Amino acid sequence: MFPPRRGELGRWLPPWLTPARSRPVTADSTDGEADLWGYAIRREWPDGAHDLFGFTPRADVALRRLDRDRGYWRGGPVRPTAVLLVTASAGEVKSHPVRGCRKSSCPDSLQWGQR
Image (cartoon, rainbow, N blue to C red; front, side, top):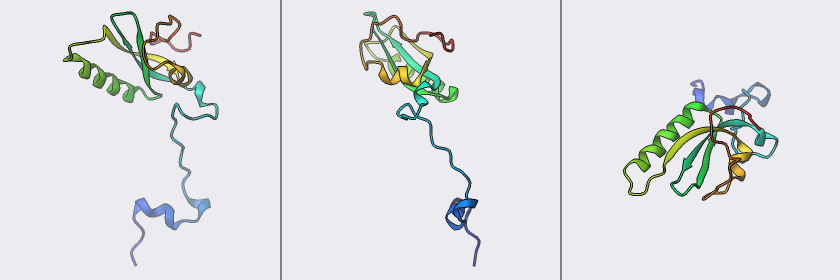
């Protein structure tokens, strides 16, 4: 008999000995995580509107998403005037309109918790 592989270890141990697994943090969670601060991408358009999307609490993931979005728009005929990384709460990003927001109160810089 061979010992269980490392990936299957939790299946063979009793519940009180299995390692606790953390729940992934997302913007869709409802148990108080809407106040979670992280990063989002803000896309500015020539007509003065902007988009806010792609919330993540991790800086490395946010930078990868920013590079991917900039690369996508680089070769297109219609380009945003700016694509930048901003700090925002998960609740702000979730409640933000999908397209064409013109509010001046939306996050627009990398400074934490100004409101």
